[in-house]
Image 1: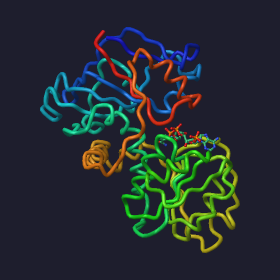
Image 2: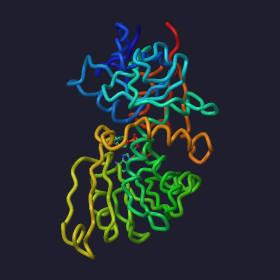
Image 3: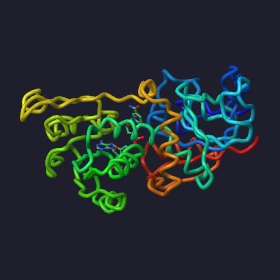
Image 4: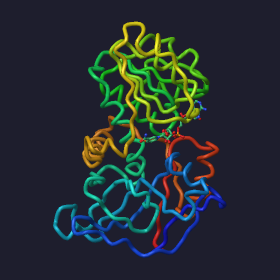
Length: 317
Ligand SMILES: NC(=O)c1ccc[n+]([C@@H]2O[C@H](COP(=O)([O-])OP(=O)(O)OC[C@H]3O[C@@H](n4cnc5c(N)ncnc54)[C@H](OP(=O)(O)O)[C@@H]3O)[C@@H](O)[C@H]2O)c1
């Protein structure tokens, strides 16, 4: 079969290679992949010489070709969406691990399902860290990005007043269209406190934003940090940012890899798919292409020349 591998010297850091079909264990299935979406994290990793030659790919959608021998998973022919912590999903076939996949309900397209796993599950885990946010304020940074897009909507669905942070004026109407009650434009974190204090702050931007976000987290509130799009260095003053002004603030470091110890991804995916099916959760704008175009779209993702999600369709070779 064909698969994409990490090749940092080539366009987008990706190159096609031949490989053996994976061999599932008795409690795993073999999935014939029909599509996958790109995430910034994995495409960023594909630029590193240290990763050269490795497999790549978290999110996938496909059809069960060989069900689990022990009968534990979906039946042959079931459409499924999942993700691979092993990072090997950008291929014609992947192993279907029951804890990391869910059947796609009728009415939800492969393309839309493919946008959900890493971005949607990270957003869902972040919102689930909010303690009694109903009727309270939640701040979401980077709402023009993959995770922020879902986090904004999920916070709104949870009954919170949602404040969205964007960098660009043109993203204000986009954020409001997704349900933001207020939008803050900030390129370095200054001004993110203009909408008061927040019970929950969901942050994928980090860098210079971090101390502003901590300071605008309410007494007893939580700052969930899951990404560092603005840089990995942050400084803050424990007083007053953390334990001043009433204190009782928490910082939660979120990584999807270990969130799965708290709730299997299969459960989160079912929750997200149900929200999409019932039209409560919108899918991002999709840029769709054949997976032969994956290197070009990975390069475009890095330079942010398109918004929303790239979904690549895997055709038979
Ligand atoms: N911990 C985990 O398990 C986990 C899971 C998923 C993602 N992540 C990480 O979370 C981050 C976001 O992921 P994503 O897939 O949502 O990425 P994405 O789609 O590229 O979105 C990035 C967001 O950050 C904003 N941004 C980029 N550079 C910025 C800067 N210098 N200053 C302020 N804002 C900036 C972008 O705004 P513009 O549209 O204005 O550029 C966009 O809203 C990445 O660092 C990713 O690796 C972590």
